[in-house]
Length: 66
Image (tube, rainbow, N blue to C red; front, top):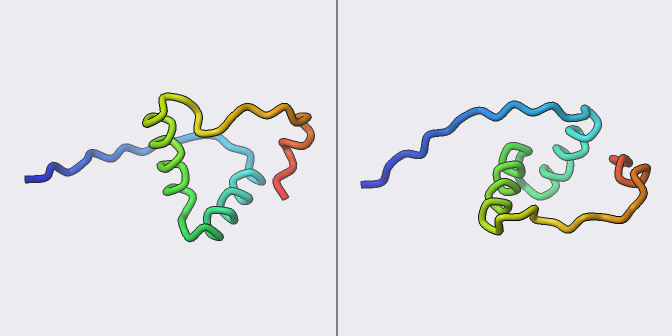
């Protein structure tokens, strides 16, 4: 018999423009932002590291959400 996973709510603070841009990308991928965040955390747990490498780009470039 399968046991039901207990879900909890995660509250985070995020820049509104970044959230909107993230929602747009997730929608283009056919998922919602909640699913994208769950995939990110699952990948991080599975690999026991961030699922991307650090960037050497200037911070001004990293803040461009367009």
